[in-house]
Length: 323
Ligand SMILES: NC(=O)c1ccc[n+]([C@@H]2O[C@H](COP(=O)([O-])OP(=O)(O)OC[C@H]3O[C@@H](n4cnc5c(N)ncnc54)[C@H](O)[C@@H]3O)[C@@H](O)[C@H]2O)c1
Ligand SMILES: O=c1ccn([C@@H]2O[C@H](COP(=O)(O)OP(=O)(O)O[C@H]3O[C@H](CO)[C@@H](O)[C@H](O)[C@H]3O)[C@@H](O)[C@H]2O)c(=O)[nH]1
Image (tube, rainbow, N blue to C red; front, side, top):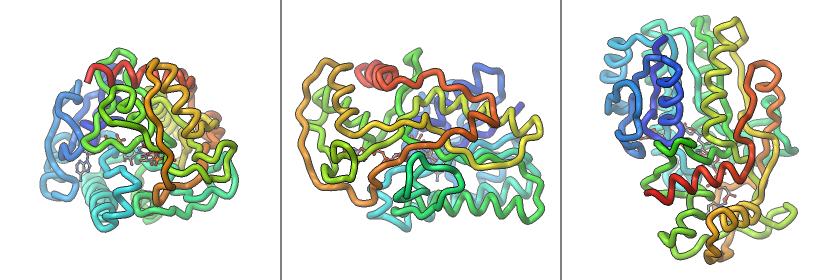
């Protein structure tokens, strides 16, 4: 089976490409390398191209003619999206429209979209369920919600695409074999920044906000290991191919850690008591996001294997210390 992976040179996409390659899928990665690295693509070919370059996108898809499109390519920083909203709408939404346009033209049948817990905005209750209100509080979340809508509407218009929209919670950790991991040109993610503080690459870790309505005043997130996340894509694909209905799925573990709890785990795992400073909230950050993952657990064969915060931080640290 042939799988076209957009964003396959990035953090999550490269773990997906590795798993697909190991399982014997034929893979083609399409990535503009704006935040990806060609060395991270361990299987199949890489076409360096932009989603916004419709001609190249359509030609690449036509030449490869995949059975499945897995769409990871996006700009992913909440903070940057608040400062550069047009960039986010253009890259993420217009990019996805180009992809859907080409998919429809070529008659491709399966589509898995990387969406995000950021579509929920300030959750009224946690854990959040897929049918809960989606009112993003930053342009990144809106750009992803628009992509969801476009895909749902394409199906509703009668085009017989089978899709899964996966709303990832906070993805962390690295390939346990140590071949790939998270590399970012401008790292903003909490665990990665904490590890960089432990390495001395940044002078301290700043905690963004200590006045959230949570147990210790810092924001809570549901951290999921990247290996479980990419496995979830195969489980969902199997579900669709066996006749499962197109649907939206939360992908998280259903439990949350505060920023301070993560700091404690990172200090324990690295053995480094790095400096922590306390600053104001970061614009666009909701207080708490935890997945209700019962739908994916019930409907597909997905079974988390790496759902231990120490395993997540350890695999990330093993990768990061080699960089
Ligand atoms: N990391 C997380 O915690 C998280 C959580 C929820 C959802 N997601 C989603 O997962 C997906 C992958 O995120 P990631 O963390 O691996 O980010 P990443 O930046 O490592 O990967 C994204 C890849 O897409 C490529 N890309 C971006 N715009 C492109 C364009 N216009 N054309 C071609 N390639 C382009 C980048 O070069 C990069 O390699 C994204 O869609 C993101 O919204 C990530
Ligand atoms: O140096 C830092 C970095 C982050 N945080 C806090 O840590 C939490 C997690 O932040 P981060 O790791 O940047 O993730 P999120 O902003 O929650 O967003 C991630 O998780 C979303 C899903 O929940 C994805 O959609 C996004 O792509 C991904 O960046 C937030 O409360 C941040 O304010 C800090 O306090 N200090």
